[in-house]
Length: 172
Image (tube, rainbow, N blue to C red; front, side, top):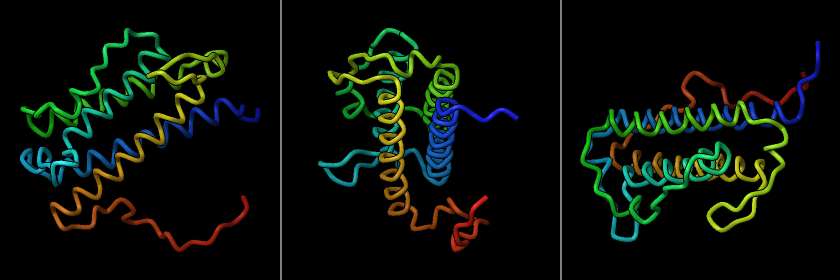
């Protein structure tokens, strides 16, 4: 059996974490009404819907534009000012579709593209840096969405249902 390459392992882990965040956001959205998803806790904060629009914009700019070489059409300020006027399934579909496209790009990215430098949003990053940025940014805002959902519905989100998190580490 051939050992998995470092690049393949990196891409697999990045995709795993992106899919995990997408599933958590979907779980949150399924607990909310559209009014709740659009509710801002205060003027200094964003609604869940705006956070999702922001995530879609960020993923599109960093992965689909920078790595897949699609045109960069991001209008970042609109992600925070737009009032979502569709329903929860449409919002969830937008998030899932954007994440799935990005994960496909990551999966198929050649090694030389992981190492090639680019300017994205004014920052100089190679492909690995772009992917790390997207994964951590996605996770960060997923946590915000989870917290806002808990505050709105007063429920455990069940992200770890059926998993014993008290199991001790062991070598394989």
